[in-house]
Length: 100
Image 1 (cartoon, helix red, strand yellow):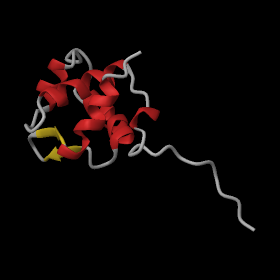
Image 2 (cartoon, rainbow, N blue to C red):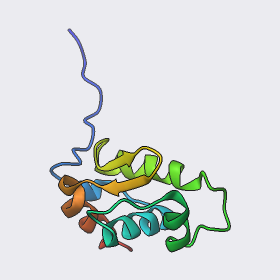
Image 3 (cartoon, rainbow, N blue to C red):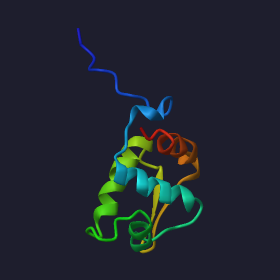
Image 4 (tube, rainbow, N blue to C red):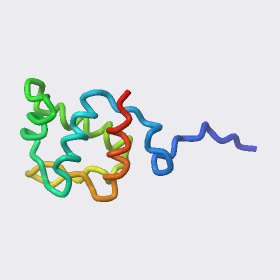
C-alpha cells in the first residue's frame, strides 16, 4: 500500500495560491506592462526599481515568477531579454492584483 504525499497547489485552477514578494511583483508588473515585447535585463531592472542591485537579481526573481505561473510563463529570448507568454497574462494579472 502506497501513501500519496500532500497535494500540491494547482496554479492553473487557482494561481493565487502563490504569493510573490515585492520585488517579484515589481518585475511581473513590468513584464505585464511590456506584454508582447521583449525587455532587456537592464531595462527590466531599471523599470522594476532594482537597478542598484546585482544585474543577476532579475534572473532569480524570474525563477519565483515561473514557479508561480508555470515554467513556460516567461519566455527567454537569447541575448535580448524576456517576455511574458500570452498564456500567462491572465494569471499574471491575478497575481499582481492580489497585493495585500
